[in-house]
Length: 401
Image (tube, rainbow, N blue to C red; front, side, top):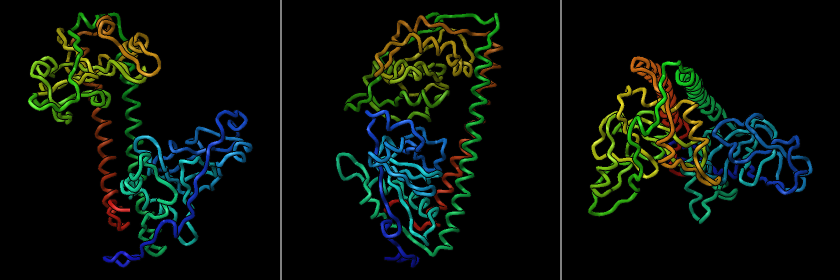
């Protein structure tokens, strides 16, 4: 089989690679766990190289012998055959000899085929490979399905050249992401210093004194006859410090009374009152403009201030360790979900400096956030350029496997 436009041979993955999976020793037997053998699961597969420090579990020789787990050598390509979210279909290259579980497919290419090229080709076909699994209730991949993946296969010299070019782009993306991570850590340290090292002139105020807290947000429904609105939801608040109309894309409907009651005005502070983990309670973001037809969801509460806090400072005022520790301590839950009820939230206190200090703090932290975001945008740009280049070099459009 060949690519008719370019005359490049197209093979099935199973023709040029041995594909096997592993297993999991019994969790009920502690003698199988905590040994010296690295044991890889799908959570370790993240579209890159898996080093020894990336593998968080170990099994014993006895656990290996008494299960279907198997050791595969460094350099093996691993693909996640199932897993939560976007895990299924991801690929990584194993950096050390390690055992794998039954959800990981080990792809060992034959001599004369460049494994880095195969890795890049499989990575580029991520979406198409995931669609191959959408045939049953489990939506899992299998080794048999993986053997059927089509793979354009130029001669070895071209394989190596393509792989090297794409790995260079991978390095550029990873470097930009690493720089963004460093800048984020620095920003977090600055935030801690500015908000936690407070002087005696800061005043302490309960949220109920500073403003009005409202819950009972809009549900995620589309009901004929109701008013169309755009929703600020849990993830919007978790991902952003500043929310504008352009950030909200979730269209729903609501009665006019609810649309009015839950409206979003410039300066509103949105908080997350519930989550599956305590750490995600009381995250906050500020609305930076009046948002026509904008409303907050039932997973969010709104703090509308009576006091005149600086707009940028509002985005950070509730991010101090002291405030978040209050939320962590006061939220109620049984381990499945934690909730900070409105009466408790109203009693929580925040420390606020004078207006000059607010403007200074808000300005410094906003500049730090902008620096992180601009670096992430560079990483996203590199990633888009890499994908376009991969489509040309690999002669795969990414839509079919």
